[in-house]
Image (cartoon, rainbow, N blue to C red; front, top):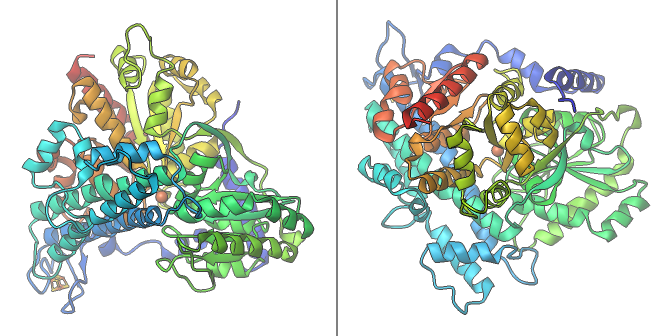
Amino acid sequence: FKLTTVEEFEAATEKLLETGKKVGADAWQYRAAKQTPHCKFGEQGVCCRICAMGPCRITPKAPRGICGCDVHGIVGRNYLKFTAGGAATHSDHGREICHTLYCAKPEGPYKVKDPEKLIRIAKEWGVETEGKDIYDLAHEMAYLGMSEYGKVFGTQNFLKRAPQHTQEIWEREEIAPRAIDREVSCSLHMSHMGCSSLPEALIRQSLRAGLSDGWGGSMAGTEFSDVLFGTPKPIETEANLGVMVAENVNIVVHGHDPSLSEMICEYADDPEMIAYAKEMGAKGITVSGVCCTSNEVAMRRGIPMAGNFLQQENVVLTGACEAIVVDVQCIFPALGPLSKCFHTKFVTTSPIAQMPDAEYIRFNAETAGENAKAIVKMAIENFKNRKPELVHIPDMKQKATVGYSVEAIVKTLDGVANSQVDEMGTTKPLLECITSGVIRGAVAMVGCNNPKVRPDTAHIELMKKMIANDIIIIASGCSAQAAARAGLMDKEAKELCGAGLKRVCELADIPPVLHMGSCVDISRMMILAAELAKDSGLNISQLPVVGCAPEWMSEKAVSIGNYVVATGIDTFLGVDPYVSGSDQIAQLLTEGVRDWVEAAYTVEKDIDKLGDAMIARIEEKRTALGI
Ligand code: SF4
Ligand code: FE2
C-alpha cells in the first residue's frame, strides 16, 4: 500500500497545464500569480464600501471612516456579511432539497428512498405519521421544512437534537437561530451603514447566522437528501483524475445539489444511453465528480471522485471530458472560456449559477428526467468531437471506502461493541475507545482548497499526523476528497495509524479517515457530536474533539466555522478570515466567544504548528476529564 503524494499530484497537474498551453488555456495557477500580492486593506478586513460616502480604508492616519466607524466596526461588519453570504448559500441549497422533496412522486423522477428516516424526522417534529401515505407525509414535511425558513415565531426545529446544555447556552446567549431567512436578513440589516458597529453584537449575530445554517438550512439539506436519495452506507469507490476513462464518454458533475447529479447518474446508467454511446464510438459512459456534488453521489452510489475544488480545471485539461455539468456553488467561471479551448461542453443548469460561455439547460424538479437525458445525450454526441492529440488522463487513482453517515457509523460501531456490556445502536463503543485511550480523540477535517496553501498538503499532512497519533478523522467536502485522492480512505491506510487506531480500524473494518459527505453534511458531524455528548453525559465542549479547515476559502466555510464553534467545538483555521486588522474582533473570535459558547477559533498558518495545537487541545480535554 502506498499513498499518492502531493508531489505526484503536482507533476500530473504540470503535465495537464502543458496541454493547456498548446491550446492557449488560462488556469488558476497563472491568475493567482497575477493577483498576488493581494490588497493589504482587503486582507486585513479594514476596507469598507457599504455606503457611497466611501469606500473608506483605515490607516494609522485615518483611523475612522467618514461616518466615524472605527476599524473594529468595519472588520466586524465585514465578517458578519461574509457569514451571512455563507449561511444564505448553504441554506438555500437546503431549501431546494425541500422543494425537490415536495415534488417527489411514486412514478416521478424523485422518489422517497428512505421512508424510515422521513418518519423518524416527522415524529421528531411532532407530525402525525400513523396511517399516512408516505408521499403525503413527504409533501407535508417538505412544506414544514420550507416553513423553517420564514417561521414567524420560535427557533429552528432541529435545535432540539442538541444536548440540553447546548440548547441552554444558545438561549442564554440569545443566539438560538430563529427563521433561517430572518437570521440572514438580520445580519445584512445589522451590518448596514449606521447600524451595529459594536464588536460583541456583530460576532454574536455571526454565531447566530452560522447556527441557522448548521442546525437549520444545512441540516435540512442533509436530512431531506437522505430521505430522497437514501442514507449513505459504506461503499467502495475510487478517487483522482485516473477515474476518468479514455475510451468512454466522460461526464463530470460539479457543484453541490444532488438533485441534478442523481438524475445524471440515473440516465448515464440507462441501457439505452449506453447503447447510444457505443453507437457513437465509445465503450461506455463514465460519470465522475468534482466538489460536493461528487461527494453526494460517491456516498450514495459509489460514483468516483475525479478531484476537488482546485482540480476542476484539470478535469477539462484532460481533453477527455465530454461535458462538465454544474449546479451551484464553487464553480469557477473560468470553466466557460476553458471549455472553449477543448471540445468540452460546459453545462450550467441552475438559475442561481449562470455563467458566460456555457450551455444553459435549465433543470427543474418537475422535468428532471428529460433534462438529465438531454444532457447525457449531448455529452454522448460530443464524443466524436474529441481531439485525440489533446487527450491525456493522468494514470493515478486510489481506492476509497466512503459513505459514513451517522447512521452508518453507529451501525459500524456495533462491530467493535462487546455485545455483553455495550449498548448496541449507540455511540458508546466509540466513547469506550476514547475513554480507554485506544483512540485519543477525533478531528473533523473539512473545507476547501485555497491557492494560499499548497493545495491538499495541509489536509493530507494534518490527517497523517493525526492518525499516527491515534486520532480518528471524520472528513467532508474537499478535505475528504483530498484524503481519498491520497489514499487515506483506503482501509490499508490503517498501516499509517498508531497502534490503537490501527486496532480499531481492523476490528470495525474501516479506514482511519471516514468520509461523512459534502459540506452541508457537516450537520452530520454536529449530530454525531450531540449523540456522543448525550451518550457520555458530557457537554460537547468537554469531548476530545476539534474541527479543522486548513485550506478554506469560501463564505460558506466561515458560516460553518461559526456554527461549529457555537456548538462548543474548538475550530482550527489555516487561513485568516480577513480579521487581522482588528485586535478586538480577532480577540473575540479566538478567546472572547469561549465565555459564551465554551469554544473558540485558533488561526495558524504554519500547518505543523496547527497540527500540534490540535493534539494539545485534545490532550488538554482528556486531562480535564481525567482520562
Ligand atoms: Fe466609510 Fe462609514 Fe460608509 Fe463604511 S459606512 S464606506 S466607513 S462612511
Ligand atoms: Fe462543498
